[in-house]
Image 1 (cartoon, helix red, strand yellow):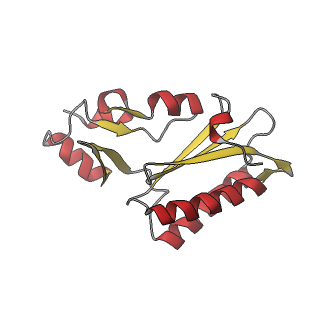
Image 2: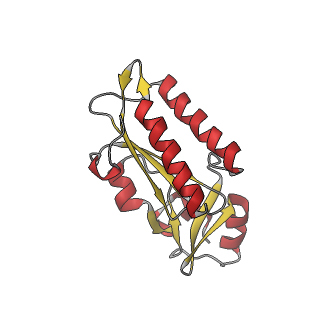
Image 3: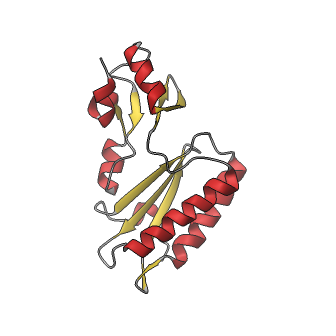
Length: 161
């Protein structure tokens, strides 16, 4: 069951999928339509899942699930991964690799493989104050409060000299 992302409770489970390139506005509209259709029919053991989504900065697909009524099961999580994989194929992007880093470079959002980000940190091209996207957030509250944070406040801090 599709609901407006804003209406999901703060303890809703969150999945953040970042892309390795910026989506065009046309792609965002298509992806939003496809994601809405997927979430409308998303179920766990026959029970409708109350879920919502948003697409941020034309780079992130954020899916939220209200677990008060029904939680995602292994099969429903598999279904969501298959859906994301279908988007990867259709749009020739990488959405599932968690070993990539997205961060602000001035006013622009940059994307680097983790190995490159580590090199940049060593060369001090990024600092502890560089704002990164912490895609490991688990709840909507964490997403709202701790998704865009200085690297020193995220798991990225381990790479900073």
